[in-house]
View 1 (tube, rainbow, N blue to C red):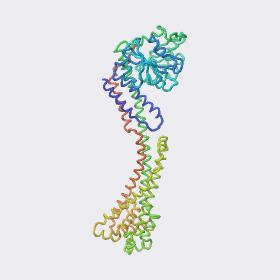
View 2 (view 1 turned 90 degrees about the horizontal axis):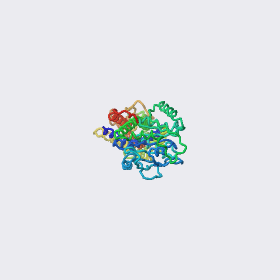
View 3 (view 1 turned 45 degrees about the horizontal axis):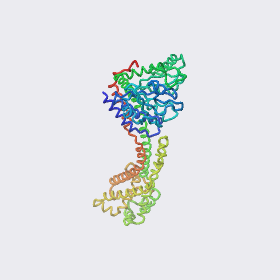
View 4 (view 1 turned 90 degrees about the vertical axis):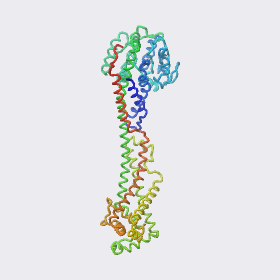
Length: 572
C-alpha cells in the first residue's frame, strides 16, 4: 500500500525540482518560497517516512525565544543534554536526542539529510548535535529546535524546517506569550497538517493553571484547532540545576512514554502524521499549479503582444507594396526616365513599338536601367527597415506596460531595435526578390512566340514592368482602369499583356507579390524570434500546471487508498 504513495512522492520531488516561476508576478516571492518549503519537506520527511514507517519517531520541541524549550527537554530526560542560556537566540545548534540503539539511524538516515550531524556544538545553523542517552526510549527521538521568532534569520528558517519534518510537535509557550501571533501562525500550520501536537504552557503563576488552560483551549476551539494535549507547568523562581521537578514534568513524560511504548503505537502516529502532511501538500500544489498557469498566461500574453506588432508590420508592408505607395519618388522618376510619361500614355496603343524602343536600352545595361534597379531596392529596403524598426519598438513598449515585461526589456534593451546589420540583410533580400521576378519572367516566356516578344522588350525591362504592376496590385488582381502616378501601372501592365496576355499578367503579379511577402515575413520572423527566444529562456514548462495538478490528484488518491481507514489516535 505504501508503494503508490512512495511513487507519488518521488514524482512530487521530480516536478518540484522543475518548477520555474520566472516572472515577477504578484505573490511570486511567496510562491517560490512555497516551492522550496515543499521540496525540503518532501526530502526531509515525506519520502524518508514513506520509505520506513518503523523508523524512530521525531518529536520536535519548538517555541518562542526564552519559552523554556531546552529546560523542558532536560527535565524530560532527567539530565542536562540541551544547553540553555540568556543570550538570544538561546538555542543556536539544535540538539537531537535519541536512544543509543537509534543513534546510527539519526546520524546517517535520510531524515533531515541536508543537515550536518555532530557530537558537539557547531556554530552553523545547518548542523545538528546528536546526543544518545538511555533516558529516552528506543524508537522516539526528541529535537530541541531553534526559536521560531529568532532574531537570526537562518535559525528562524531552520526552526520551521525542523517542525515540517516532525512526526509530532511539543510546542512550548508561556503564560504571558501564548497569544503571540508567531505562535498561532505555527499552531494553525500544525492544524492544517493535522499533526499530533502537545502544547506546553510554561511559567503559569501559581493557581492559574486551570484558568489559563481553559482560555487557551477556547482560543484553539475558536480557530478550529483540535488540540487536546495541553500541559500547564507552574512558574519556578529558581530551577537550581535547570531541571523541573519530577512531579511537575510527570504528565508530559507519561504522554511521551505512551507514544514510545510499542512499535504499533509508534507506527500509528507515524502513519497519521504522514497522511496529514501529504493531505496538506495537495492544496498547496494546486496553489502552485494556479501560479504556474498565471506565469504561462503572462508569458503567452507577452508572446502575443510581440507577435501582434510584427503581424501589423507585415500587413503594413504588404499594403504599401501593393497600393501604389511605392510608385512615387525615386522609383517613379526612374521608371519615367525609361518609358516616358503622358505623351506615351495618350498614344500607347499605337506606339507600343516606341515603348519597346525606349526599354531596349535596359537590355544592354544602360545606366538608367541600373538606376531603376537601385531605386526599387532602396525603396523597398527603406520601407521594410522602417516598419520592422517600428515593430521592435512597439513590441518592447507593449512588454514594458507590465512590471514583468519591463523587467525583461530592462535586461535586454537590444530587443527594442533590429539586430546589427539588419538593413544590409534587407537590401540583400530585396535584390534576391528582384532575381525571383526575373526568373518568373524567363519561365513564363519559354514558349516560342512569348520568347520572341520577351526578347523584343528584354527580360530586365519586362521584370521591371512586373514589379511596377505588383506595386499597384490590390487583392492579387491588377486594375488597368486605375492609373497610379501618371499611369505608371497602366503602362507596365500593357507591356506585360503584350508579351504574355491578360491572364498571365494577373498570375505573374500574384506570384511575384507572394514571393515578396514570404521574403519580408522571413525577415520579420527573425526579428520577432528574438522576443520569443527571450521568453523561452525563462524556462517555464507549459505543461507544468497540468503536471502539478496530476501530482496533487495522485497524492490525494494514494493517501486515501492507504490511510482512509485510520482515524486520529486517541488517548495520548
